[in-house]
Image 1 (cartoon, rainbow over the protein chains, first blue to last red):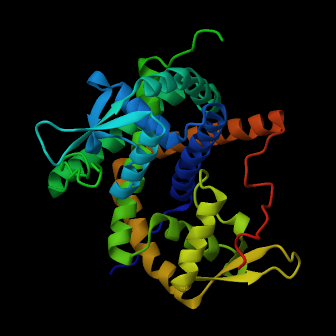
Image 2: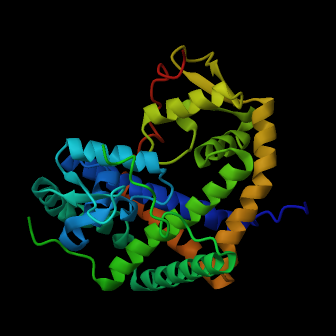
Length: 174
Length: 174
């Protein structure tokens, strides 16, 4: 292996800052929302994901919580939310091994109550710091990195899980 | 409560992109590093944090893994790394309730082997997408948000845990 191409001082600061800003902003929003509503950031992400889907319903593999979640962790998350009455599991008519997750009335109420609080925290901890120039730069950065990742997937033929491969839902249905 | 100040379309894209880029980049780096070295991203964060400390040693509350980790999750993380021989726990001479975590020889070997792989992945999934203008904009964005958070802490008198309040280490020492 050739000598590692270590990050220079500016790159190091940019990378660590990128991680630190994300962790700090998400951490603050998560703590406040938890205190105010009892919802964790994972609960909130699942509720948002479902509330934006037709009929408040998605296949388990379509739920967006976080890219680095293992399947078993998602399964436990859904189990906890089911036992709290926020979502229900339903079998797929088209796929006997598959499962849907659907928002309940209580789930709709929870996301409706939490969303105005959440957006206030996103403004307080993130957008209140930024001017239009920062937002412009962030949009450009996001688009650039995401296009780079898509291009890498296309070239490698290795798409990121779980976008393309519906996992078996056996572990979700009882 | 007044009407929520919802994000407009550009802010929505900027916020969701900010989350998506972070999750996608960290997810890819984590998966590759896990495959190559058996280290999770949390293992790696703990090893880096210790390797940069004098004597490879930190108090538990000084370990940086992720801002949203609960104390019990950090305790379990350290327990697992101890059982794999990557770190050892040692009592604090100055604080009978406190604990140090120290890198072992195997821990040093693990971080020394993993760091060149990790930096290659950070380049591949992040810096290879960026030009110097992006890095400049990112440094500015990071500094701006972190200064805003520090200022909010100063004004609120509410510093972010766990920076300032050393938690009891009872739950870490056996």
